[in-house]
Amino acid sequence: MRGIEKALSSLESAGVRPVAISADSPEESLELCRKAGITFSILSDRTAEAIRRYDLLVAGAGEDGRDISGTAEFLLDSSGTVRWRKMSETSGDRFVEAAKVLD
Image (cartoon, rainbow, N blue to C red; front, top):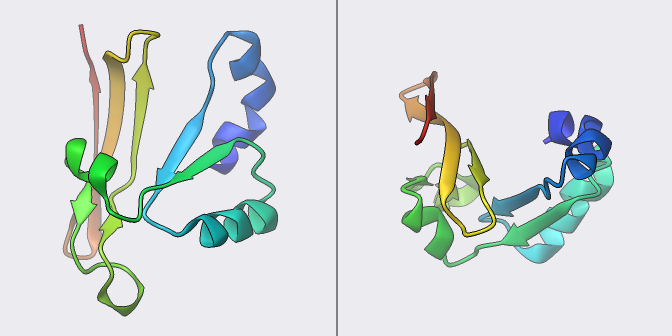
């Protein structure tokens, strides 16, 4: 997210509006933004509806066994169609990076 924040001006100039989605509560997300200097929106998905829709749920991997989201980046066009994605999947203690450009 810090990389997005660093590029925020350029992204906004290109008409891109970054938004993050987190399984954290709104209060936890606000605290994260404050500590990390994040100024773009972070939406709370406590019920993991969006996280499940994008197949990113990592069951029991959070604090106190809470469900969390895997790390992923998506680029959606104005109609909501996913045009690009980069996903990190957990496999034990390692992360496997995969990037795919969608037609």
